[in-house]
Image (cartoon, rainbow, N blue to C red; front, side, top):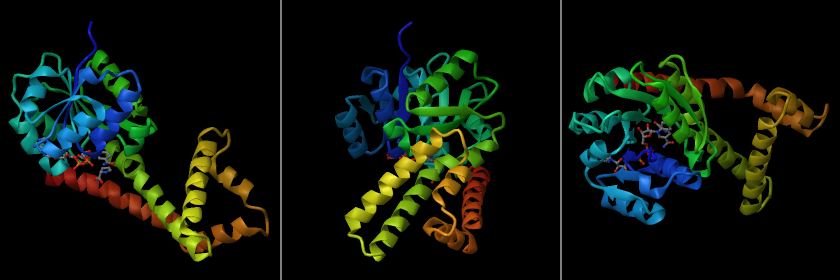
Length: 272
Ligand SMILES: NC(=O)C1=CN([C@@H]2O[C@H](COP(=O)(O)OP(=O)(O)OC[C@H]3O[C@@H](n4cnc5c(N)ncnc54)[C@H](O)[C@@H]3O)[C@@H](O)[C@H]2O)C=CC1
Ligand SMILES: O=C(O)[C@@H]1CCC=N1
């Protein structure tokens, strides 16, 4: 059997990250297509990746074994309703939109559609992504493996037992890269305030983030223990951590992530 064709509807940030990561793995450019109503986006992807692009979403729906819906949540209903009901046989549809339920997608695309809801993240571009996946009953074992192979090409993926967990995944890892970028911005600015040249503060921060994440991923002890090992009693780290704790760092993070998850659930109701 020939390799499946994968079509991205919406060729923006997230589609670019996924396609970029897939091409570094064993996916062939000739098996990937992308449609976008922006000619600049189409040209950019065609140039960057050598994939086929189209202004017509219908073309992808008729030709591709897998359709990845990667437009903004607010545009999803119109995109789905405009797709033809006669699509490629045995097609799998993967939606990466935050806050668009399988129930809504089923209504817009046809109830029999095999649907996977997925929440990836932008480090997929570097093949360091992490995604949560939820499959509807219509998805067969082969299609599940196909969805997994796409997301695993750009990082790791985890299956979820309940669709509602997607909002939590969105809050943790979908939006998560932005939290780390925000911390990097703040640490860089603080390093500068402490007297370092900006570039030095930035590089120290970036490589500390990279080193800490790599160490935590490969460690057999948890993050709390790794933190304790950096914190000498009466030393410098302890002073910083105590100051963060007094200022409510864990509560600040929990409130922010709750806001992200709530927005996911709210979008599902607003855009149903
Ligand atoms: N950016 C991120 O970190 C993540 C985004 N997502 C989800 O991915 C989806 C896309 O997000 P981004 O890539 O950030 O947005 P984006 O705005 O960069 O990309 C969306 C693309 O869709 C195109 N588009 C809009 N209407 C269209 C139509 N009718 N037909 C064809 N193309 C159309 C736009 O021109 C744009 O290039 C969203 O639903 C978002 O919730 C999920 C996980 C992470
Ligand atoms: O901010 C958003 O809505 C999207 C979903 C997760 C990351 N970006």
